Image (cartoon, rainbow, N blue to C red):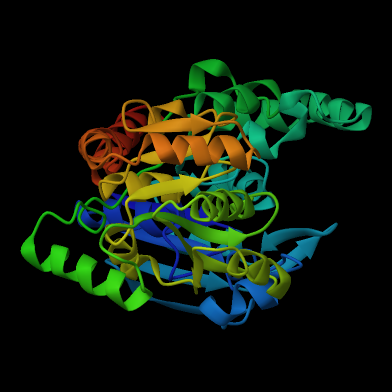
Length: 401
């Protein structure tokens, strides 16, 4: 089967769906092409230069085509239309490749619309995916303006309705994302199937071997952690919308009370945000590392904590056997049920209390084992790819619309 995956941007060192799904599909013996722009992930963020450039390089990279992780990567020049990103030459690339299946990641992007309009001439089956959680989409929480409400009503009745008629399926990654897809993006509910994000379970796994345990011991020692200290890890950008500062405050509070707790923050942000974390007792900052190098940092930790919003890193940490503490506002409760706790969002005192609840090695071990088993059973990228391929194959058996 020839499959084209389309993502508006792409960075090799990341572990997002656009990195993992093509690799998983290719590993199952299919010809896979990832078509993207020459933009790095988050290239247009106001804080890109300070937060991401030291890790992944300049925001705009050369256009190219080459093999990567078993699939073909095609970087095309980016453009803009009314301030929105588009992939220039996308239609021609699709016509040249002639894929049987096309999968996109953003329902409302210009690349998805252009792909839908190119469907009839090239003759592929089109599938969508949506990663829009309610936590980053104010209208879903009733916080949008009247103008927003009117915009999404008109969108769902026009572009959304057209797009829905042209696709086979749409895969939102959670129930709240599914509600947004139907209510605001105009996709018919019968074409919606919730499929969570996945994990590379060959890479992210518990440190159950002798060498992995030795790696844990050595990294903890190099980071300055004592054997008896409970290390809480956060990975990602340091920003208010993610609020790692809440974790830093909770760790500072526990340390001030004499507790053997430490905070490990792997990532980056503005200089003042990095400084705000470093100044609190018990907290250290480590720069971003490539996804392939992340497992040892999870092995070196004892609890994974993401104070705000959903993150793919939560699943990676659970796969490595860490119990989780997440915000009580998240909608992906399956990530934490049986293998972690919730805390009152933005409340460092409550977060400190939840960390204390996981001070027992026995409780952490039990929850960690539950989490790693759950991830391997339900969230493996290979299993998700196998399920996706079944839908692709079924669609190909039906005459083109």
